[in-house]
Image 1 (tube, rainbow, N blue to C red):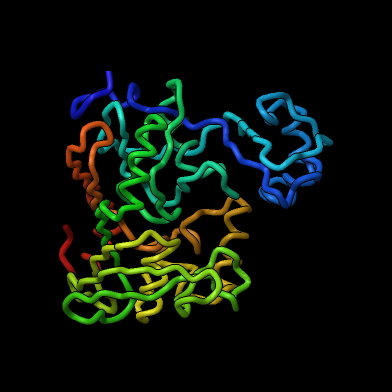
Image 2 (cartoon, rainbow, N blue to C red):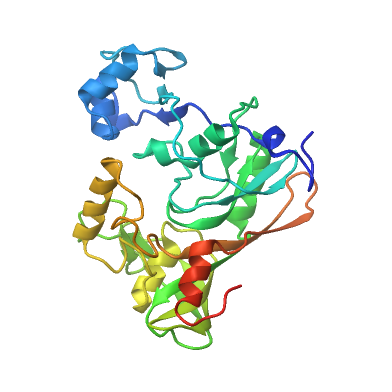
Length: 336
């Protein structure tokens, strides 16, 4: 039975498998194989063709064929090969009939529909526990692939809707800790700067601070507070009041203090493109190989929301991971 504190983790987990994607209007009329090759480039045409013939793909819950003509809204499901990756512990922070919270390790993507399915959190959970519990887990928010910390999943649709209402109302409180380049200003400050596409970048996912009212601009607010000055860096607490893509990272770059280890913000496009090519070759995500810190040093330390069923306050906290502690202490700071 899944309840509070002393539960067995395996009984609490709803595995998300296979990976699913909805065909967009732009792919209407294309063949399945053509769309897969263009959209998910971690396999080539031969690889996707083999996966289809090995019954690893379904279209609208039926067997798929390479020359199936797609329609807008089709559901495509892909079950990757069962060979597990290296074990990645997924600590549980909380489990009840509505919600499951985990302490997400770095280098795992949250969404199952990803260009790097071998390192997705849903697959890591499923492969670690090796047991399927009926019904999917739905993440109620996102963390970037390299970000660690508190992540919440809804265990049923009603819980997901209740959590979504809280996020939309701005009543969910989130706190992050970050190690950033340079000497961050003392005290606390609020950054109110709209975020939109980085129009001069070749990277579609890249965001930037843009003028309010410009195309794609969305209002964004983040509070930053200095915790410690370190050797060549600073430890900062970050509280996002809105939920824009890469919000903390974009605002820190805007302030001139990008995250330590960030390979997208505070860098040229070429650095990120080299890194993604390295990942697609199954390279070590700590890039360059074995680098320290090896990832962007951002940790989702705390999340507060209300239980979907009765409104009870829920305060979830993830302890600092070893690499964050090491980065702080090695630069003359104190951890925790």
